[in-house]
Image (tube, rainbow, N blue to C red):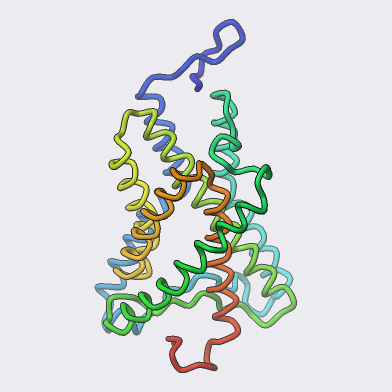
Length: 263
């Protein structure tokens, strides 16, 4: 672990206040801020005339309509800068003498990570889609529009990159880093599980109550699996597959099947 003062060339262990401050700063620069933003957006949707399902929650939209090359630059810029908090976490873990390998985000077990992730994605994907459809029909969720990019050559590569970015950011920070720091702060395993899961749900609240509840449940499952396997690698793989399925699946099926809500 680290503090800001080297002693004999080594970093001394920080106190609880320093660890707590570090955790708050990382969250304020990443998914904690996203959670507050999602809450504000949800309040805005609730107070807007009309039902929630008649409003759209847009995920991957054009950043420069009618200008595909500029749009591509903006898409790549957004994806890369969104991963800066992950680089910060990697640096902070290295300073304490560990690293991303200690939370299981490395290339030491690529095939087991992918295999486990595929099984998790298969289980969560079907139930998650059914839950979304029910919540949307009941009026508790906005209509999620996973992508509205123009039909250009880079559309699907950008959607896949966006899925990878979401997965790495969320699983490294919300599971690996947050659980590690809360454990160091003396939180009980149950309290840490609840905090991580509610945090995951919070930044999906812009989708509605269904988005919040569904992701809280997913958060519980992911924390339990992380504690079982000791690796975020399978969770990154699972999350990537889920998002690729959602983004690409919507791009292919929207307007062609009657069971998929669109606006």
